[in-house]
Every structure is written in C-alpha cells, then in structure tokens.
Image (cartoon, rainbow, N blue to C red; front, side, top):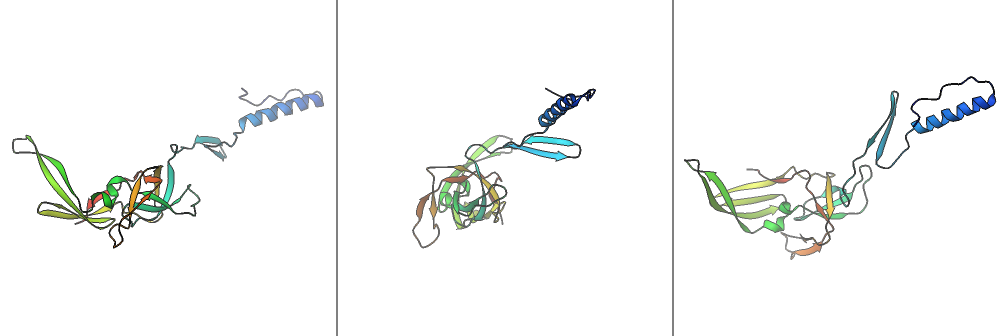
Length: 201
C-alpha cells in the first residue's frame, strides 16, 4: 500500500515525467475515499474523515406520528430522516398503552412492603380501570383512586420506531356508539421513548 506520494525523480525525458505523473495519480486515487452506502464522508481543510452510519435492525422502520387519539393505534407516515411518505400507516401502540387491554377491567397485583420489623409482606390489590380517552384514565384501588395520563405526551410529527407484526389486531372505534371493530395492523410501536401512564392528580 502506498502511504506517501512518489518522490519526484530526475526528469531526464518526457517518459520519466509521464511515469511519475501516473504514479502520483494512482496515489491520489488511493487516498480519495469512495462514496459508499452506510458510510458518511466529510472533507475538511485538515483532511478527509469517514464514519459508519448506524443501521436499523432488519425490519425496524421509522415513522412520524400524525394522530394518536384512537384507543389502540397511531396513524403515522413513513419517515427516512429527510422525506415523509404520503400514505397513512396504522401502527399499534405498545401493549400497556392500548385502551382495550384494560378499559373496564379489574386486575389483581401483588404489592410488597416492609412491616415494622423490616419483614417483607405481600398484599393483593385489585386495580380497576376506566378510560376517558386514549390518553386519560382513572385507576381505582379500593377506596383510593387517581387519574393518569401518558408521559411523554404524544405530539404530531414525533418520530417512532416500529417493528413488523403480521398477526396483531387492534380495536377501532372503542368508546363510541359504534361496536368495536377489529383490524389487523402490520406494525407495532417499540416505545423507544418509554411512554408510560403517570399520575396526573
């Protein structure tokens, strides 16, 4: 591998000059990085730099959220970091953010604590869920209740990562006078932003 430009030889004739120019050209070609997929090339006054561009796992796709108000899915558009697609895509919300999973149900959970002697004790609590919208609900635990909302909040044009899902079904029209209508969706949100239900009051 050539690591330094060829020295200028004594130029006794045109052939010697031509040979040197050819070697110099070859050196310049070897030092000029080629544009390649998955590699970012930056040319500056102090040199040329290359770095690998991280790739998404196979099947993982970026979307921009356009609407989040339905109970179980997001309406999104494909997004490659620069250009937004023109077609709506239905992306299922992550499991714990779907309303149909919990609305009107009661779930028993085990709650652990320490008593006055620092001994571990376990109690069973029954949580009841009532949804007022896809992002606002009341949770009741016996005589206590609290309202909860999803944090971080969904915002239009938020970018999410979704994975393919060929057999997932979500509920459309939940909470309306129309009977729930089940539809298949090909994508599920990976919830990389760690959205979760949090106490609002």
